[in-house]
Image (tube, rainbow, N blue to C red; front, side, top):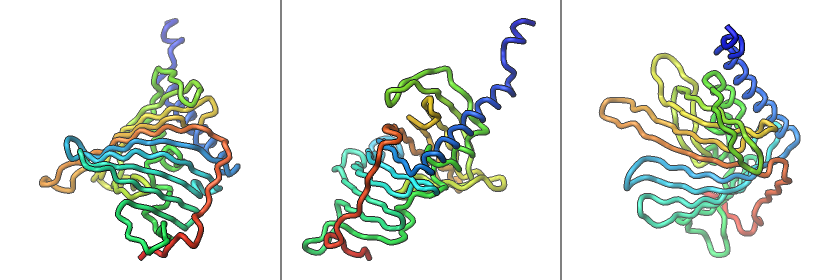
Length: 249
């Protein structure tokens, strides 16, 4: 009887975990309201074996009330043993500036400028620990893990879970999902999230499986690992000089 009284019921443990993710959502929205920012580094691998695609990314985000309002990202990707493919992207509101390894730009120009190019822009349907909508989606499956890892110089609490979604797609901005509808599950996200004592993300891992549409197709898998640091650090992101940019076609 003593053991039963001392051990929290499963329902109470789940409620506590959901409360922790609710606090994470509140903490993120607090950063949004303060127009704060964060630095990050990320590795993303799509597929397995010799043809796997690996992208190594680092950069910074600046927030506004609605979420990530500006980003400065540098990425290097490789496919199998192929050559590295560099990519640079600056987002400011609805304006995007890119540099790619295959650009053919007029003399004196160094950037392509895009306006309202959704594939480059942060959105609220990304598999992303900075997305309160995604954190709300995964909160129902979250379980606290018995670990106290340190990231960004602080002790963290880890939460794990799996969520089924209606569809999965990808763009330069990240992995997009839609919520589950009907009986068909377009994808599955198995995730781990490490929160600091301020309830802000310090690390996020996800294995994202694209379910096939038919028997002739194979499921595809994306694995990502993201580290966050420098919460509250002033983040300054500026557009390239206009004289160096050309309107993208």
